[in-house]
Image 1 (spheres, rainbow, N blue to C red):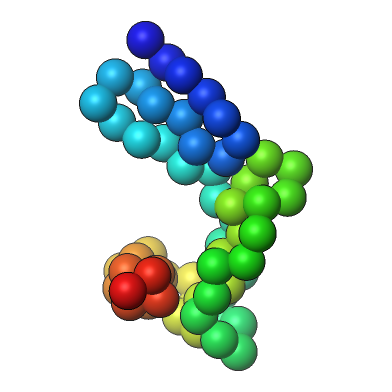
Image 2 (cartoon, rainbow, N blue to C red):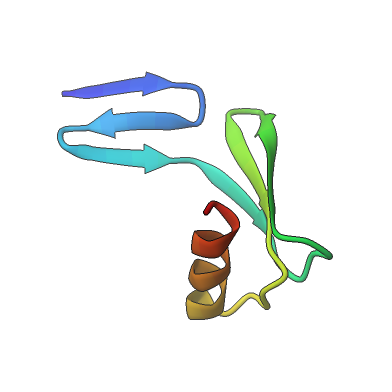
Length: 60
C-alpha cells in the first residue's frame, strides 16, 4: 500500500521523499516545501557521497 502527503509518501515500510537539492550553497539548510518538493541546500559539490554526508550532518 502507498500513502502520500506532500513531499513524503509511504510505500510499505519505506518512506520516500521528493527533494530538490541545491549543491554548492553557502550554508547547509533545510528550507521549505515548494511544488511538492522539500528544498535543501548543501555546501557539498554535486558528488553523491559528499552530498549525503553533508545532508546527514545538516539535519543533526
